[in-house]
Length: 185
Image (tube, one colour):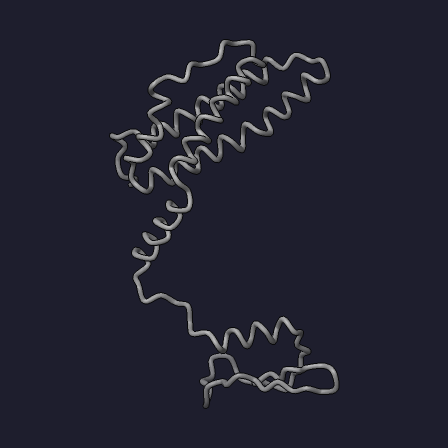
């Protein structure tokens, strides 16, 4: 046993693996413990020994920038524009359940993809998250409203509450991608 805080006299080498009968055992370099290894353990161990370290020599800021660029390439703005329009179609259905007239998809709402294209990376990220959050709120909300109406009950009050939540969340997303939005502190 090695006392805590004591320096090792020699570096630890990979522990030897022994085959005893049909089982493979691993001997711990510290002490005399033996543990049985599975095929997955052996494969992972061989992969770690064969592969060089995956650490980057780049500073964290550059790695973060590269990841953000890769994320944006994987999620084109046109996809978000389609999701934006689909959310407004869902909101029109919601307005019908709430017994109010549907909102017109005006130029301010239609300009969202253009504003998103001109936005900074942090604004685009927040807009993606916001639209995803709105979608995550609307789907179960509409399902619940469908269940209420299927029972023959009036769903206009909860539909109106969900409609208001949609508008507050949507206005927050629009505020994020406005051209005059400033850098977060």
